[in-house]
Image 1 (tube, rainbow, N blue to C red):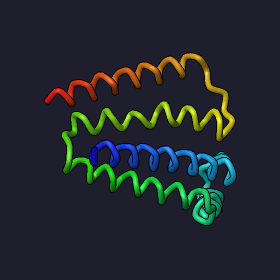
Image 2 (image 1 turned 90 degrees about the vertical axis):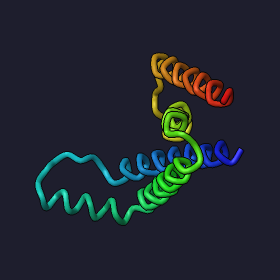
Image 3 (image 1 turned 90 degrees about the horizontal axis):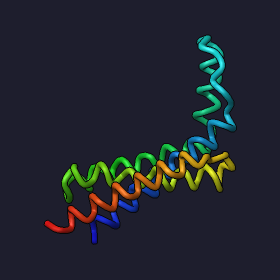
Length: 126
């Protein structure tokens, strides 16, 4: 139970981090040049953007949960189970970021969910 709670915390923190970072970078603007002065200005806007700050915070939470999970469960379970972020990210991209999500992406995420279910069943039979 502790492992699944930590895994869901990791997944939700990772998804929140991805969504906040994406929203923040859309606010900051496109990386359109590699000229040092313009890159520094872009970095300045990124560092001061609150959405990016929240994204980094949630990514840090996900990272530390991953480290904790590795002390409680096998890597062969933890790493594939973190793929739950993909279907939830697809939903976040569609409903929060208002991105267009194709049928192929939805089918791909269903395949990921099936794989996670198979891994979960095989790990619970130990």
